[in-house]
Image 1 (cartoon, rainbow, N blue to C red):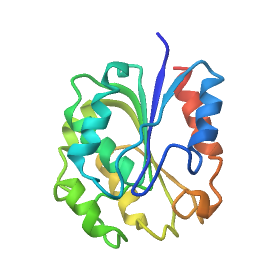
Image 2 (tube, rainbow, N blue to C red):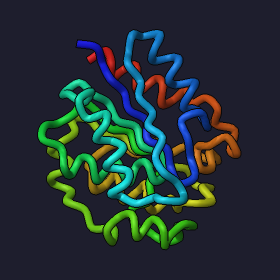
Image 3 (cartoon, rainbow, N blue to C red):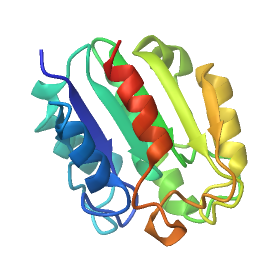
Image 4 (cartoon, helix red, strand yellow):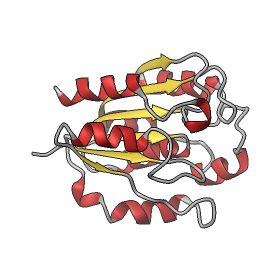
Length: 188
């Protein structure tokens, strides 16, 4: 069974930004299918509209699937895991807002998140391995979000100093640590 990796962008994002194309190329060289949906953002951005886009890719999800969520894409990933019918192999959360202030896009994230209330037990039951990446100088999502997310998921926090929001503005057109962890996951 071919392994499928999904990457979910954040607010104002798209599939060709940041480290997404680089990771996509590296994983395709390992015979993975990589899906990076384009979600409506910022216009038309809502949990419902993003779920509707994801539904067009649902048939590609199985127990070996791996999800990666960047920023609001990580928040979307939490909502997906709450609603999965079966567990997936792994989930990687990069600079994910979960309601710990300060968050630069608080209003839009809050509306998208249904009030930052999560079913943590359901989320944990639907992912075999979760990893959280966060930095200490993220201008959009404070480190407290990554710390609390790792605690709630009972997962590892991959603290990366001075990585900003893990985006192109912070120099992240490649993400070596994430790639290393993805390759380890693929070998399982």
